[in-house]
Length: 145
Image (cartoon, rainbow, N blue to C red; front, side):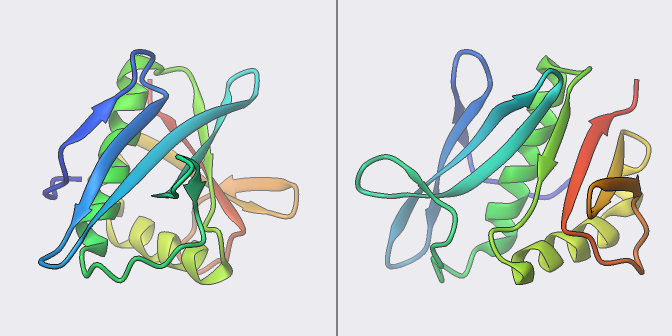
């Protein structure tokens, strides 16, 4: 969580964040959105913006900046919780491989997040405290209060 990240623009309500992925050959508009799905639970949607301004969470950018992009998404989560400390965020990859990537990052960065956040893994309809050796279909994060 102490990684470099792209500059981003937040919406007035801090539920949408826009930034650009940059390489030597192209710039790709990206967006992170927090969408209310239950009383205190938001779904994190993330991806490239298509020509209609919609998030495409299946696109593969190949812009060779995955670490910067994911660090930017993590930064938007941190900002979200500064504004909405009593809410929860559900996130999953758009593919099983992306969900697995998120799990690897959560495990690798555990020392950086465990004093600030509680992360649970979703198996079926049940959540449990995140465990590195388990495979989850999604994750729920909340701020430690």
